[in-house]
Image (cartoon, rainbow, N blue to C red; front, side, top):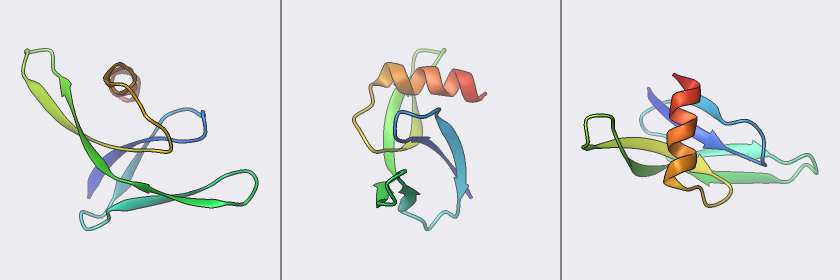
Length: 75
């Protein structure tokens, strides 16, 4: 299983656990439309100065700052 930070529909960020072979996550908008969110790798700076690989799925562009804030919120 792998952990994926999910940003969807301006709602609160969530942490999903999915099988290692999964490459996208399905979500449904209030209108009933489904969307497949591709799981992507993002590199964010860690506290030690190097970079940490994080898995992210989103229905919009997210900044490294948003990802960093999500990591802090979810830990």
